[in-house]
Image 1: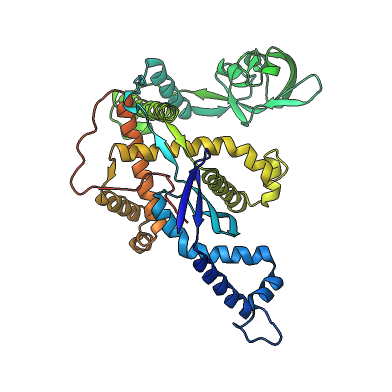
Image 2: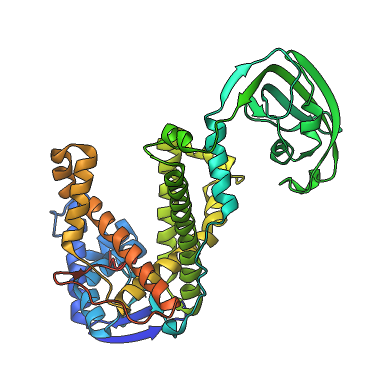
Length: 452
């Protein structure tokens, strides 16, 4: 066997495998014997049919590619080993010649990632803070939730709870938005909640079973820019008016809403939870920025088949979602996405799928470059926590034998750890702390190393 390798711009390679005439003849004979058993040839016993009759029966091209498959079983793996290529998936036979015997195979190559100067990436991190106004808003919300409500037979006044309906119509008498809740508090916040200037004043003084139509302007905070500053006709219906007596912000409220001894304890708890939430949101946003910074710095190359596989996976997931979550026929679901068919959907999601695929490849490269690891005992600890949550150890024992489930835990924990490491790099915090004993490397997150 003689081999030539041509590297292509598509991150593929063409292997031209030159085959000895004797080996080519041997492959032809093997195919002829096989096909002679699949077809009936009057006057000949299976396995003893002349090759020219077999070729005439199946066609020259079909016979040629049967021979190519036979040759590939013998020579393809040897050619890969000799070429020292790192293939992604099986090669595809491009051409087969018999004079001289030659086979051309297109080989997709594994994606490659160059992280470039990733250790120099810096992204400023702004630690979140909780201000007094945010704490006060949460406390007032608790105050409102614990108000004493009593129905009254009088016109609505500030602070009352109103049960009814509010709908805004444009000049074409089309409902453009409405109050989704069946009740609301009559205060200044009503105007901003509905984006209608003067709405609370319009409701003021209305009584139960009263209807009113007023013309109001939409404020500049309305999400629909086309409605901002326009005048709409607002229909208001009041079904019931109730007074609200707010509890004091004191120890009594603290003891009502939880196991707090004092109002100071309640306030401290509110501040702590607000800070935890803001930290979670800030870290999530920061991590997104950092991951994108690493992805933008990196150079990633992959063959067309790699992205084709990622699109196939995305479509399969969407089909599963349509069938199991939304209980819809996939063709109908596709039309709801504003495209005509599956081909249109593939084109619509292509950019997002490519972007996520690049991110996943970069995460995998960072995990290898930084030797990020996950300890086996961490996986076992999560399984035990899952067992406690389910209250069913037998169910967890079954899951422990489910390789997809275990791999999901591995990949999720590894991905989180990789992103954490990227965050430390972006903050300029130096090297990662030493890994604990017993930790073992885990396959890079979301990186496909399949050769099949």
